[in-house]
Structure formats: structure tokens, C-alpha cells
Image (spheres, rainbow, N blue to C red):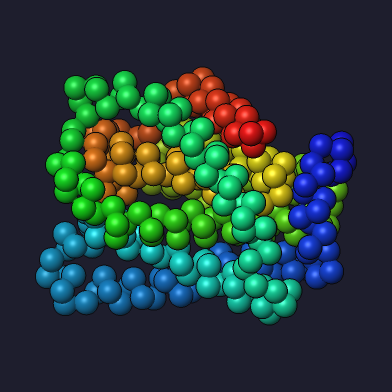
Length: 295
């Protein structure tokens, strides 16, 4: 199956990057993005962790690393801005372009994103409603307080999803599509890399790799709708709706739960996915997004 057979919109999208697309540039960009983030952020976090304020009150650092307070959630999400800055530098240095072409036509991207979000939101509400009613689930703050933290925290979630979509679907998928007509290259490779960055070495192997598989599958869903529409709008919408419900509505208490209205206590147990449910739900997300794009 060639690029033009099933994804004509991706042909048009890839053409915008044809002139400067190089395999060496893609590799260089990946190295810069991964190691650049580490080199920029790790020293700052190290200095901060050994500052007198933190050594005298280690609970502050614990809150940051677990994302157990609204402020900690904001800082964790804000750090993704580093990826956006690095990507902007890569684009200017290697490709002589800005971030805008990675998104696609702004009006079309916004329209498609809104439509996909409208279709997906009821699906997530339907899926999460039984879990919220579970007796073990805790409401960690009043609704008024929760609404009060959204204006400062929700925009930073868009920084996080924007960084990931710009890197994996915006840059990698588009440039690989300009270099190869095979979907297994430009769709699967970025999705696998997207999955791998979600690997958590602190978890047992089964749990950690199951989450990588789930993230890879989500990446494939986002890659497909990007290729079918030709902009990042649908993928951003899928990512935004998924992360909104996972970070702000019902979050597990192992990481990044400080801004959630409801918290699911894990009691220290690793994430054990219900694979058939997860697979079926992602299939529903993909089909709903496909239907939304036809409207």
C-alpha cells in the first residue's frame, strides 16, 4: 500500500517538507530533542533538589516528582515547553522553517479538532462514569476549587500535548512521509517511539511494557487521523480529550494526580491494564474520530 492509495491528504502534507527532508536530519533532530531535554532540564532539577529549601523540606520534591499537588502538575506540564523550543531550533537550523507547517492549515485544523473533541467527550464520559461511582474512588477537592485551578493548569496541558504532537506527528511523521511512501515507516516508527518515551522503569516489566503498547496504539490512532485529515487538529483533539480526563477528571494516585477532581487509589500496586477493555476503547476512539472527520 502506497502513501497515495489511502492517505491522499498525507501526500499533500508531506510535499511541504520534501525539499529539506533528509534521513540524517531526522536522526539528528531525534537526538537533539531527546538529549537536549535531558541536558537542559536535568542540571536545573539537580540544583533545585539540593537547594536549602528542598533539603529542609523534601516533601516539596516528592510532590513535584509525583505530581501530587496542583502546582506540581503545572510544573510537570510546563517542562514540555522545552521540547517545543528545541523543535523550533531544529526546524530553523536544519529545515529553515517555523512550527506552523507542522500544524497544517490553521482554520481546517481548528475546525477538525473541535469536531473530533465534540465526538470524543461523550465517549470518555460514558467510559469513566462507572469508575467515578466506584466506592474506592476519592473526590480530592470541591468542585469549586477544581474549577478554580483549571484556568492556570489547563493551558499547560495544551503545552504538553502540543509538544508531543508537534514532535511525533508534526515533525517525525511528516518528514518520514516525505522520505518514504510506506505507512509502516512514517506511521509505525513515530508511534513506537512515542510509546517508548512512556516507559517507566520503576514499574514491573509487565506493567511498564503494557503501557508502552497502549501509548503506541494511541500514537497509531493519532497518526492515522493526521494522515487522513492532513493537519494536527484531529490528533491534538484526541490527545487533549484523553489527557484532560486522565489528568483533571479521574487520575490514578501514582503520578500527576494533583489537579484531578477524582483520584483512584492504587495502594502502591503497579498499573495492570485490562487489555481487552483498553483495546476496545481505543478502537472506539479511533472510529469516533473517523466519523467526526466525515462530518
